[in-house]
Length: 379
Image 1 (tube, rainbow, N blue to C red):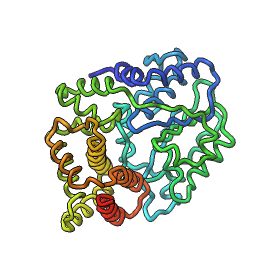
Image 2: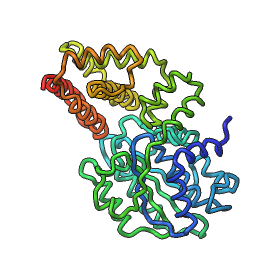
Image 3: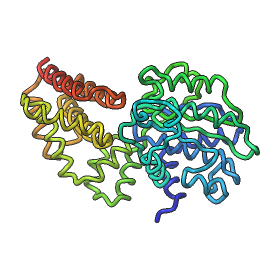
Image 4: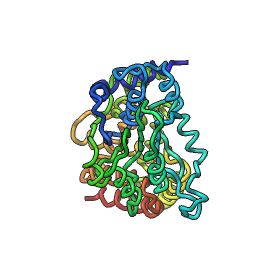
């Protein structure tokens, strides 16, 4: 089994500049009350937040994680008493926030935290979880404002997908804002997000921002090679995933031919005027958005990549699929729809990715997507 230290070094080497900045903060002892880790999807933001929390609580060093002290050992399973990880959760049954539900922890959460402890690049996606629950934030107040019996270590709260604090009426965001306005002693909150602009500006203004860039293509390539992916296939996947480790992981689990076939079927369905296939598409992906959000995102990322490649080809640039069976399909598309607003189609697909996180009515959203694509094809 690969050691925790080796796995962590892989993440830290991929984000060396950011990690060096976090180490300087640790050494300075001038630890902020709140940080905002923002950047593109799959950049390793969540893993860096966890490692920063571990560094702040390491009993042997404030320069590097020792992995051997009692604190570091407890961090290995993410069950440390100083660590509190908050993730989007499903709404309580009947949408009630009463005593019966307030301390309920879904089995999916326990499983997800275990997966995260094994692999820092693992993405927690709990079915039907589309917001940070108000009870998750209310529970923090009781936990954080209790005085600790000792001064060893620092309380760290990490909120994954923190933009989901602000969906709906934003009750969770407003509750967190009260904590940020009067931060408890010896505590640091780390908000992690792919969508910084979706957070309330009042929250952003109270955080020190740590901008995290996508890992390099070389890192993604070496990571894929470590998963026993063939060199030729790894090179293609690197160009497709564009620095997104989550997408690289999803792509690496499928044979290349299956990926190409899935993209071809999706693009054909959305481009051609076939109401029967549209109904099947809408029915299938409406169900998938509720039952397997990761698979839903994976498929829509694939179709976005296809349209992005079509746009590159039309601009005379090299596309991700030039050396695949999709090249002819892309050429034919650009010849058939020379006036298509491909950029607008890509934006429409990005809106779908946001909508699925906001618990909107997916059948209607998907129907509107198809209509928008058909409209943009003839602009």
